Image 1: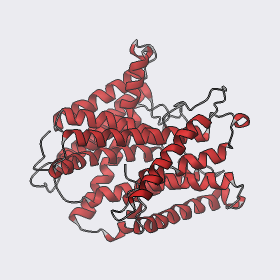
Image 2: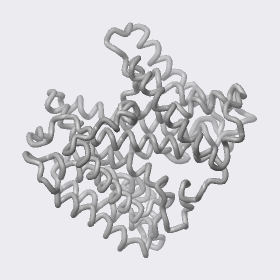
Image 3: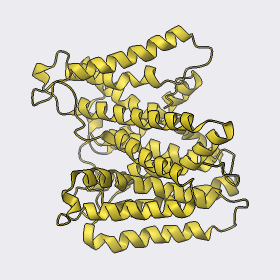
Image 4: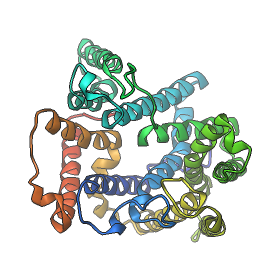
Length: 396
């Protein structure tokens, strides 16, 4: 794969801002999920509702941002002189780490037989959520090597032990990927997309073709009468191509924006693709509906439309108009996305393991619950600011 000479080689603040905003909203909606009596538009839509809310947009937005970052990540490593082996090793490790963490998170929440577990499920969950921090922390160069190795290999040993301490509700020992979890789904979508991106050398036309293939496979997989729907391998691959379509959309929009010598005043190609995403979703809606839970193509394409429009606005505001100071509030999350995703789970399982009732029930319902969820999200951003300052940053 060759270096993309035309690819913009500076930090894109608007991508970081979109990532930070997405993570802030993600923490908010995750906390809000346990609050009773909130409006439906602040929750995930049911599987058969043929509708979506802003909550159903959070996961697609993160996938879209992953895609936007891929061309820059590959180019940076090529410019640095990394070999193909180094790049592929890093890519596979990142995808595998996301999948592993995702599976542990899923099994912490459900699927166990509490009566047969040697340690309580709450304490098991606490360890499962906590161990990724020492394992994947980005240690400072001056950090003692012996302590770094102790923390990393000790964390791995704990995760391996947790696997054998897990007792399924069927009585079997060890975890299963009941589903891959949000991080696991991101890992699979990322892996499929970067493999293809590398094979086609990041060519725009080839990435557009991949996006089309993803949408077609997603559609076929949702037709019960089709022969391919009955094929387990196709079902597995098409299921992950559903999410890869959003990663691919992010790659396409990123290339249209930044893989050029001179940025146009109005990027008609990006506007055209936003319209194309919308039209595709609109045309497929009568056949499959809009559903995040089912992973329908209309959901992915409408999400890609919204993400494209939102990013274009941020690009205009921050890269052209240079209005960036407002984004400082969200940047701590953008710099440490994995840790801020994990940390609320650590807090939850710590409270559950030690039977701590931190939040009064008054803040678990209605408007007080909504306000608390906003406050909690803000607190998490402040915690990330402290973590970033003291070099506690997860890096896959």
